[in-house]
Length: 442
Image (cartoon, rainbow, N blue to C red):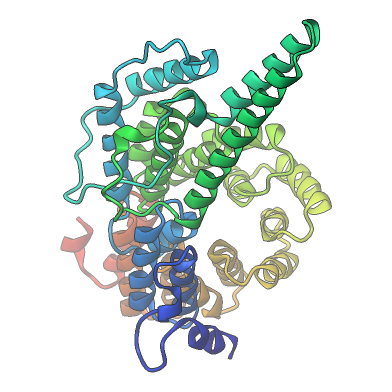
């Protein structure tokens, strides 16, 4: 009922498009993203994909829209960010160094970092057919249009000079007036930027006019987005390769390291995945994202001690987070306390009803305890149709019921999504052999 009300509020009555009141407003991309979420929850993946594409088209910074498209497995959002990164590299290669004496030391240091990042960026990226640009603040050309750091550093230096010299009230007032006018102009530009999220349709703004700081932000977001797309399609070697090509500062981001750990988990390198995530947990003890992956790696390694310590820490600090209850569930599961593990996973999906991984863990735990229910796996597939673990769980469930043909259908779907997983291939071979398809097994 709530989803129907939300859809009625966002859409034109009896028409499959967004209400006109959102058109050309600062919230248009967010309205498309919300409508995409409604379609996912109501089992309409095609319409959800269309709205997700529109949301990402209106705002390339919308990480929720990117993840929605990745989970649905439709479109190719990676091309948007590949094109952005290509544009950034081309702009930097043609950008001439400034010799103006008004350039601050901080600005010159930022440009050096950007040039170092360019050296570590691959130059062989193919540009997409549609050139992608974003709306961004233009580069500084006059002292009045410098960034905050330059304005504030100048204002502070001027204050120190006037305090050490003889009082000059007229000159001091003129400097104060200049500082206030400059800050006002900068705030107006920032407000204009916030009111118009960066759209790939604003081609009139040339990337060469972007400020160095904004160009670096675009570069980092593009790298992270390409990592997310590769992880969503289970291209683990591509994730590792791209991570190694990323700028050094971008490599230190918690999200980048989490995605790298997910890639190692898919390669069945549980030791490396656990090592990355444990280091991340030590540096960011209050960050729970990715801890469910760490608990899965420790579960596969059958490391009861480390898993117990992690579960105790996470559940004490973040009892209202679904990731913590996934960790606790894996901790009880590795000790063969399946009923308690099921309660933990159910607590996780109660806290966050849109957490596909928790539903997948719940489905597998129910399967291990001989509960022949596929509701959890079905819910996981509703939220994320590209979750091969849920398809794998359904295949095992039908195989246990001796419904071999259905098991083959679901396992084949899992292998189609992730053809690099040896566990899936082995289980599909068992099913094919049970069906006497020996040629297929070979």
